[in-house]
Image 1 (cartoon, one colour):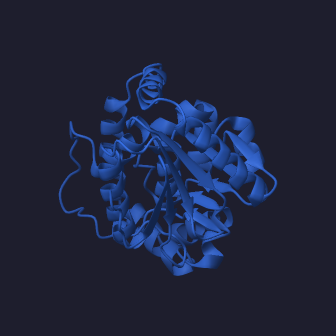
Image 2 (cartoon, one colour; image 1 turned 45 degrees about the vertical axis):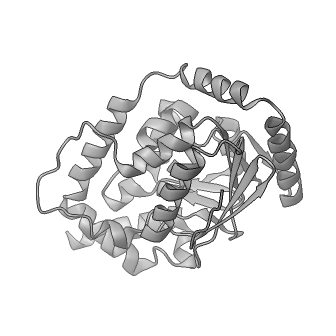
Length: 283
């Protein structure tokens, strides 16, 4: 099967597919990257030649920074938020990664923030790099909330209290802590060791029967309580926050202070404090 995208470089090694995210300069999840990820996940889900998918980044500093805030500011807010019984397209994309009958691995050698972190959290496994991998959920500081599965996936991964710290604190979580909390399966002290481990693991998994891989994954997912209702409510609450004056003010203030620039993105915890204070002074 041929995979050709503007922001994704897809290579296949027998039954292992490597997806390299390449959306300069910061791997912000623009509408184009989002569209490419949706299309890829829809297609690969039904590709019987694939057993393992590895998501990685061409950018050494960013896995995926977060969803494009400039795009979020264009979301319609001129009517009341509505609670839908269907999952959003973003939720569906993450659910495909979480439930498709293949092993999905996120190689996070840089920063994963917002929707990028939610996407990574939806993968079956996450591996990182000490002193390099950082996760951050900055949405609450922007006046919204993690609306791309984060309020449902993070409590299941790291526990309720730690998910509250990550989502409400809007601060950077380093690789060592993320590993000890169970967000990262493992954190390595060099890129070569990270690459070697994931190659060996993916090759190992790909040698097993796909029928066994898919059913084992499905059975493990069955151990989790149903989260369909939680995702529906998350989408509704996100829509409500998006319609608040504070969300619009905070997101525009954040962009003015350096959000979606290299300096701003690499100091996200401090930036959240700065634009939170600046936006408060405008109210």
